[in-house]
Amino acid sequence: MAFPNTRPRRLRLHPGIRRMVRETRLSVDALIWPLFVTHGRQMRRPVPSMPGVFQLSIDELVKDARAASKLGILAVLLFGIPKKKDARASEAYAKSGIVQQAVRALKNALPDLVVITDVCLCEYMSHGHCGVVLPPLKVRGGTGGCYVDNDASLDLLAKTALSHVVAGADIVAPSDMMDGRVKAIRTAFDHGRFSHVPIMSYAVKYASAFYGPFREAAGSTPSFGDRKSYQMDSANSREALREVRLDLEEGADFVMVKPAGPYLDVIAKVRAVTQLPVVAYQVSGEYSMLKAAAARGWLEEKAIFLESLIGMKRAGADLIVTYAARELAQSLNP
Image 1 (cartoon, rainbow, N blue to C red):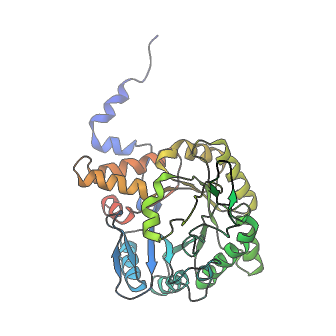
Image 2 (image 1 turned 30 degrees about the horizontal axis):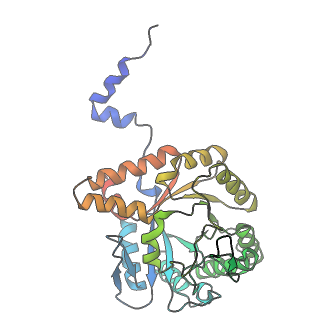
Image 3 (image 1 turned 45 degrees about the horizontal axis):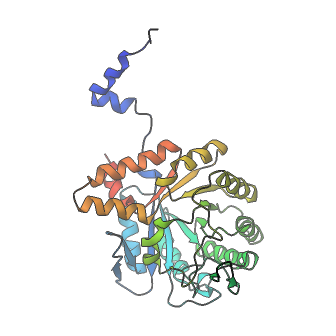
């Protein structure tokens, strides 16, 4: 049997034609740059496990955000590092909290920049977990388990999200994986006359080994136990679709898959069940692996980052959170 239309393979020969017929495109406006903000002035503290990533004081944060904006980056995602932590994560929702201060400074300096805030309690809790922790329970084998009081955590998460939008945040991104947190936040927004503010839900967040460098950057490593009781098992993909459906029913406006690279199949499945924007998060471990390999000359840095992000776009992601956003913007700009 003869197959028609075999000649278009010759399109590969001409670079201009190859660009014209390219199926998947990556542009600067698809990138979201995550940033870590801390107290102090003229503070630019390197994160050892994440080359090129820093804990920034607000003045330095504004400088970096301004430079990124000039490169065409439309949005940043903020993570806060508080002065103190406690068992109620009180600095997470304080009016003078570090994220609240940073949001006000960014919106004052760069009103057109889209400021997204991560909404979680782990950086602010003395124990490093994403919610209020119940007393440890004995489990089989005599080891202590970690159990988060889901319902008690919802009020704190809603207060945190509301404090961010009062400060001027354009989008809030709950990352805690507590059941019902999108509904709790949406209800708080509706009562507070912020019903127009979008929620970018970390709808599919796996209990991943790829988060190690982030926990160093954010100071959020749990002091005991792990997060497997409230984050997803990496073996499950049908569960991911259930999580997405529940968050959409509760009022999410974006849904995120995290990590991205090892879960391209999940991104594709999520893309198939929603017309809302799908976000992929290239997490710290993915970033640091590629950086380390490039530093050793094993991979070409620009090419491997672009290829990894194209894979996420091809899988169905509309937006990509990546620590390499500013470097990639320089490559993507004409």
